[in-house]
Amino acid sequence: MLKDKTIVLGMTGSVAVYKCCELIRLLKKAGADVHTIMTESAAEFVTPYLIEELSQNKCITDTFERVATFDVKHISLANRADMFVVAPATANIVGKIANGIADDMLSTTIMATKAKKLIVPAMNPNMYSNPIFKANVKRLQQYEDYIVMDAASGEMACGDVGQGRMPEAKQIFDFIERNIETDRPLKGKRVLVSCGATQEAIDPVRFITNHSSGKMGFAVARAAASLGAEVTIIKGNTTAEIPYGMNIVGVKSALDMFNAFKAHYEESDYIFMAAAVADYTPLKKAENKIKKTDGDMNIELKRTDDILKFLGEHSDGKRKICGFSMETENLLNNSRKKLLSKNVNMIAANSISEAGSGFGTDTNKMILITENENRELPLMSKDDCALEIVKTLIKL
Ligand code: CTP
Image (spheres, rainbow, N blue to C red):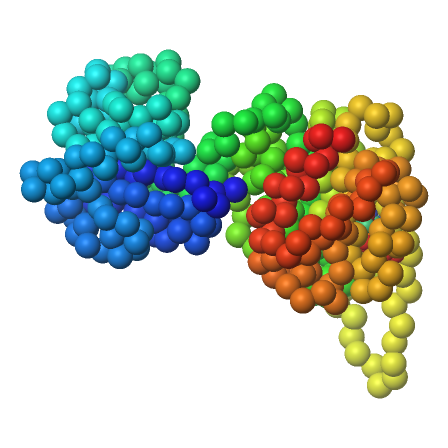
């Protein structure tokens, strides 16, 4: 989602500027071209040389000789930015932007850019609750191209406790990813995504599960959110990092997941069923821990409900549904059978025997199966793959 996007990161004087190192690393890892501007006081906390090392681009600061060299560059940066992020944003820079003051490199470049601007405040709780600061934030929020993130609560570097902390780098990163697309076809739409593995209890200490990490489902959720959707995730057991800012419904068993879907599916416009749901569950869950004996043992299993099939049968064309299919053989035939038997609009199929595909990997090689087409995607990151899956379903 951030591949080949240009992010300009403006940093002002707050101790939270150290979090920008991790933010730049995350943005670079996602394929973004990151350019940076530091106010003089930001450069007191972290050196521009470290920032340059991380971003692999010159860091523009306010010292005059550097301004002279990069004067033209900063206007071209203002033009090139897909998003302009100010993090940490002090009360001072928020006040300047809200009142049209452009008296240094950062405020001048912000004034010159037509890109979407994300302001990430970081300040002492008393400053954060100051009505003048609040009025400046309100003023910025009147303009469509300004987004102001809420500060986090907790203990500040100065020892005060309250709201004013800069959110963590990963939170800012997720926020950028969710807001960078200008084309937002899912604005006002509700998307339901399931992900992760279900756990079927055998007794209070043991369960049957599978290797699903939740990575693909989370990527789909982030992709849908980046296109403007309000996303709810029905989450089984996952090991991948959970995205920020989404409604999460945690479940354990296939039955829990089915109940969660029954409670949420009717209000959704699109469903992506990426969870690896158990097809069988123990006939009985033992109340106490099963003790071993000398002999072997068998566990009797019964079928679970097919959630995707239920959703396909109960949707009457009111929502578009994408199922997922993981196979070790006959990928195309088996997956197309699922498209028909479960009555869904699309199956995103992948073979776990294919290199770079399957559980826990960062990449996937998928075939998007619809009524009239089998579209083979090249090996790509799960994020890119997710965006392709979401865009394909909404176009159907
Ligand atoms: N699925 C479901 N409920 C189940 C089992 C699977 O909703 N009880 C969904 C999965 O989330 C996925 C799709 O059905 O979106 C296909 O799952 P998969 O495990 O590939 O296939 P199954 O239908 O379970 O068939 P099989 O295991 O025989 O391949």
